[in-house]
Structures are given as structure tokens and as C-alpha cells.
Length: 508
Image 1 (cartoon, rainbow, N blue to C red):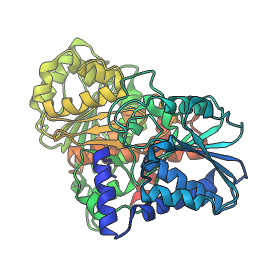
Image 2 (cartoon, rainbow, N blue to C red):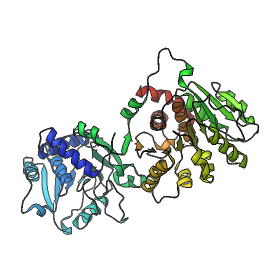
Image 3 (cartoon, helix red, strand yellow):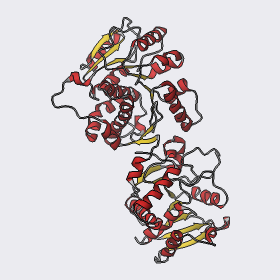
Image 4 (cartoon, one colour):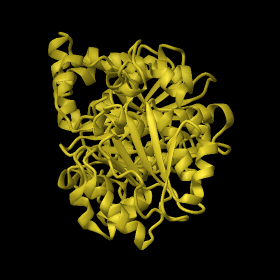
């Protein structure tokens, strides 16, 4: 699903009106109907008082129309029009028609807020609908709007924002840390998510967000270019290939996994299982000598080669890398000097796509010359701390993502920056945010499984971009399946690996 900027959203709205031959009033009424349906089905199952705040723009129009739509469903509403005197000289047709319609319903009370003393004390247990500002604002809010937002945030009521929480800039960072921004429990974002919703610092404002389909024109959305995207099920269906009826294991690639050190055999095991569960035909796992028995017992499907060292990675037993389709290195590897030398040699010799994970990233962060030898179509999979080591510290997640995009372009690699909304950046500037996953996946070994999944897909011939996007989504979907069965607290990484099959099945 594409993520558009505010100017693009305005263009899509305009095109929709022309293409569907409707006026702004009709589109606003459509929006209100969809919002009312969601509220009725999810929050207003038990009757409660609803307080709605409508600002002067399009977001305010949606809020006014929503008041009428709820009123028609016998839900009591108090609607506050903020600064309505703005339209004293000439009220636009859409606003005038929407306000006039309110008086059809005796259960909708309309009031005005022009001065700070007009801001009401909000009754507890009521539901507040925030329709003050949408995606059109480009700077922090001022004046009376700050007083209204403060009252909402101090109310201890449930808050639902329309499209984006008022005061939160949708495309760029709010530079003023003290800016007035509504803190919503839910954000009902229209047609597609907004960029601001994928940064962890903004969760206190957006709460849980839901995309509400309002029927904007599909043709222009398909045609309009944007570097920002959300990974959803439809995206993955377009990527994954069907397996041939008469295919054999040789058709699905042979992956090499270099992983593990003494005390870290589990990393190699989890990554190997992740790769096998993702459909590759063969996997060879290279581990220190003392880990051989563990690998053979834990992953009998894997071919296992051993290092001359009992405890660390120092060199490859396999000197011919051409027989492998893709190579992954890093899980549980350690950072011994001999391992640094062996990694440098491996990267220099390898001409197949690579997955660089965990300690391999940490080694490269202090041996930057290794970066230039990475094969084309390679993927790095850092967590935030690992990424800061290789790309520099960031003040927040937005800056980290900006650095991620630059890093991908400068080094011609795909980067998977792991987190609550794992982001995937590509060398050509695309940025994809994941939509699956849960806090239970913040557990030891989860990243090892993900690295294995990406290796499994790349071994089958998926390009770095597609393997990273699909791998991230499927891995997190498996985590969601586990959490639904056992809860987030009890989720462990081998559960994710064992539920990869169910995740693939849901998509395919």
C-alpha cells in the first residue's frame, strides 16, 4: 500500500471528485458514513455521550458530517465548531450545507468556540472525536486551538482522531517539542496510512490506527509515484511465486549460513530453521567444530560443515562458493580477530547475494572497507543499535530512517532496520514499513529467524528487495499467529520459526 504526502493527497482528492463526477459535499458524506460505521461497530456498542470538535478546514467538514451521521443513528452528540467566524463573510457551500443538516437531528447540540473561555470541561466517560486539523497543516498549531487540544488531552476520555491527530505534521517532523498535539487512543486514517504513523515517537499521539477506505480513485493512486509504502498482504501476494508441480529441491536453491560460536549455537539453529521453513532446497551451515553435534541433532535437514576452530569462525571448509545461491553470515558469530579476518575473506571471495546480520554488521562497523566488497543484491539486517554503529547515532526513529535510506543508496544495499514497524530501504530510494508484528517478538533469537527467512527466499532467486519485504512481513505474521495462540509474553523465537508455514499458507 502506497503512502502519499499531503500535496499528493490533495491531488488525489481533487482527481476523485472529477473522475467520479461528485462534489466535495458527497465525498465528505461518504467519509462520515464510513467513520460512523467503524465507531458503531467498535467503540459505540455501548451507548455513550459523544463530543466532537470541528476545525475550519476539510477535517472539520468530516467531523461535522460525522456528527450528523451519528445523530441519524440516535447517538447523542455535542459538536463544537472552532473559530466559525472565519466564514462570517462567505461560508463555503460544503460547510454551510453540512451545518444546516445538523438541525435535522434533535440529539445533536451545536456550540461555538471563539475564545479560551468557550472551551468546555469535558465529561468523563464520553467519547471525544478530534476533527480539528488533518494533513493540510504545515506548522505547529497556535491560539485557541492549543486551548482546545489541551482540554482534550487533560480530559481522561477516550479520544478518536480523524485522519491524523490534530497538530501532528503528517510528512515532516514536529520541530517544536512543546507543540500542542492531540493524544488519541485511535486514529481513523483515511484511505491510506500517513508517514508520521510509522515512527515510534508518534505512538503517544496516534494510538492504534486503522485505515478507513473512503473510495478514493484507484487509478490515480496506482499511477502516482511515491517512495513510501506499507507492506501488506497484497504486496506479498505480488511477490511470492507458486512452486512447480514437477520441481525438485535443486530448483529452490542452496543457501550457505555461516553462524555460531561457542555458547551461541542457538543462533545458527534458529537461522537454519528459518531458512528451511522459507522454502529453499538445500542449506549448508558452517559452524565451529564443537557445535557440529548440536546442529546435526537440532536441524537434521541441514548439511553441516565445521570450522578448524572449536569455538569461533576462522575459515570456510567450503572453498567453492559458486555452488551456493546465496550466503548469510553473522548470527552468534562473535567478533574475535580471527573471525574479522575470515569475514573479510568471505566477503571478498563471494559473488552471490549475501545477508549480513548481527555480529557481521558489528564487525563491518569498525572495518568499513568490507562494505565496498559486498556483492550486488545484498541485504543488511541491523537492529537500531547495530545500525547506529554502522551509520551513526540518530536523535529519533525518523532520523534513523532518513539515514537508512541514504545508507542504502550510498552503499548499494538493501537495509532491513528492525523494530516495531520494521523498515526496508532499497538502493533506488524506496522505503517500506511493515504492518505485521507485535511486542512479544522482542525476544532473543527473533532476528536470527528473520535472517534465515531472508536467506531462504534469496536462495530461491528472489531479489534482495523482494526477499527483504516478503521476509519481514511473513516473519512478523508468524509472530502474530503465535501471539494469538499463546500471548505475547510467552512467545519465543522457535515458536516464530515453527509457525512460518502457517504464515505462508495464509498468504498463498
